[in-house]
Length: 317
Image (cartoon, rainbow, N blue to C red; front, side, top):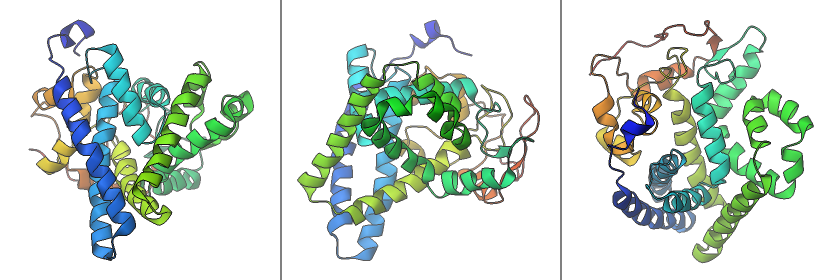
């Protein structure tokens, strides 16, 4: 695994990252306007589909900032992280806690969505699989949780909430880590995200129906990708992910996010170098080969450190 010192040899393409941000973000505004104001249903659907992919590009830049590789300047890295998070919408600090925690908990009992443990309800886990990963609910939980933070910041970090609803929903570990940070910094970033959304509505005269359609398309895309790149992989914190085969344009728009095993092995390497870190001898399944199996529901969890399970035909390059 590449260490921190070795990542210094990788040039961070800050100029490219900023260029992508300032180019893609206005396009997402136009697509939101188009979904809200087009009289053609086909145009609305195509605009929502385009929004789903380009809004995910902004998320991929947020992902870079979370790992500190958007820019070598801490100020600019966090600035664009905060701006990208506001567009998502979420708090940059909240996303950083969640994602870095994911790297520590990946494929452990605290973070399994494709499997269920002996102590868990298979039916309930399937509700989260279908509703959360496949129908987009995981994304909708994020802006809802941001609103909850804004109206009841102390409740969000209370022991009752962390170990009550948080445990039932599978977010207990995540909420425990949030409680260790300044809730007021998170609150201020959540407020910025809300202000951003309100300004968008007013500036582009968006309709709630258009906003909801565009974001539901994005939620379907984002929520599925968050676990297709892990489902059925080995129960290993570092190696429990896939490098997924997708169309080149899809991988480019996601800034190589589909090369997720390479990312988990080298989380501090910028996105432009991930293709160089893919081992051609390892499985390279397509996105769709794993996605379709998720509709079969959750399965009994194998022990930690178990190898990858292959409910799909193994695909090579």
